[in-house]
Length: 195
Image (cartoon, rainbow, N blue to C red; front, side):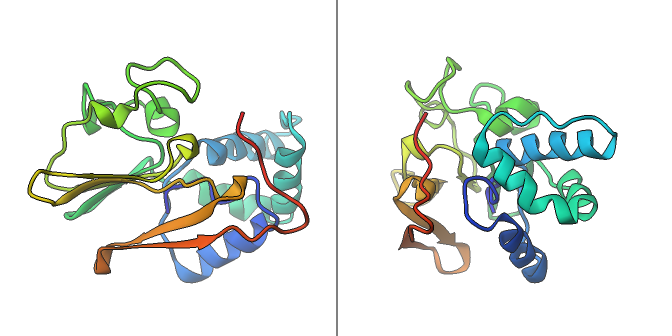
């Protein structure tokens, strides 16, 4: 999973239970990192810094399992590297490559050069592919991204298609080389919004 599995949905605790039950692997996302800081504050006796109502909802839903959830969050990697693929949350630094990508870049990179915000040339436009398929999320404004070598071989997939904004949820089944999309099911009138 490309991270941020708990933010802006109606049942973050249910999502965590499914991940735990299935043993799914996930990388740390920027919203997960925020939860990590908030639950560390709670553990250490400090008041968690929560600025938005949807962040408060997620925190409150996960609070009954705070200790176990924090331990789980603390072990999430910034990337998962396998022989056939590399999985990251937001992306990698196209100038320095995987080994020198910073924690912040793994969590929030969108544009290259970095300018902040959601508008501008994407980091993956400057990315030089290697032999592995690179899979990332995080960039709902950028939508589904599929990039192929001239030979037709897929080398990059961006999966964030903005489900929390009323669009579809997108998955890539590596073993079948197949994209799967299902429509967002509006629940309790909840959709997030682009910033």
